[in-house]
Length: 474
Image (tube, rainbow, N blue to C red):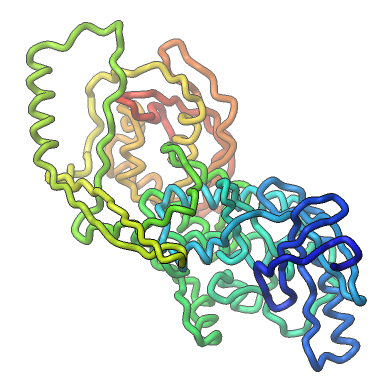
């Protein structure tokens, strides 16, 4: 029993500064997490006082942050002169434990995790707090699907320069931003890179610069800032590479990072981690091409003609010729002696890839009424804030949107003049009489003349279940 009310039950984690216990608050009859300070043997009285001040500083900083995706600081108790940090208890596993035991996670689940962590870190930054140690071990995945960031042990309040050690490098080398490895001070942008490195690890199985056991060699690699694009991140790749830009001034804010990670239009679900699966490895020849279901029929449109029905039947035959690969792998359970089997089906289309268009299509646009304003806004944010290849962004344009550039070469020439493009705040969507919507968005570009920011209004249409930008997007 500590401080007359907190009964220790079971250790659930440990670090350089203390041991975290699951405990019970006997007074309020609730389960809490209690971080008890470790005073290492051999410390001088001055060093012991320093460790105690650091623990109190962690409590003060964490108490400034109140967010649904951050572990809450509830109280500080004292036992034998040492501070004990009383925190919210979340039944969970850390992301590092999930990756070690279950393997990599699908990109859409990693995006869902990242968007929640980014939201909490954005709130921390707004409160003047830099976490400085964002890594898989400090991200908790709750049994109920909740994601929370924890451990502000080495975090720093911008207005608090106390309790520092000369020459101390704060953070975990594998997830540090390049500027930190080169000796610069941590910043909010450094947290953005560390989050990107953490999510990169979740989809690739290792952080961007590897896990070299030699810390000096690892720091040398980190300082280079040369990140190889991930192979298993799919549609999440552009966002990850944006978070992992070598120059901190080129990275998005943490608030923008949260928006980018929430971009995928497919429903995002944080996994219930009791069921463990082994994700399939990407096909080394050609990436899987998901089959998009057709949009629901419009009751006001006439019945399809015989020729159209024949074309549809031929399409079914083509799809039936696709190759279906079934991968089955066994994976040991959670240590209780049970085994589970995971089956992943990958459909590989056999039709040849379409060549890049050279001129815009002149076919009339048969559009549907846009009712999902959020999806339209996400499309615009993705278009302006993406590091995707030019072909992918070209395909996000409707006929009128493509005409503004003349052809694909003109599209490449226009956007190729900028070092980067970013966007935010696609809010205030309004509907048009033709069923389309107008989306306002804040766009920032950086080119030879410097950085330019402004508001852009673009038209979005819905064609064949796909949202397209169908106005001049320059």
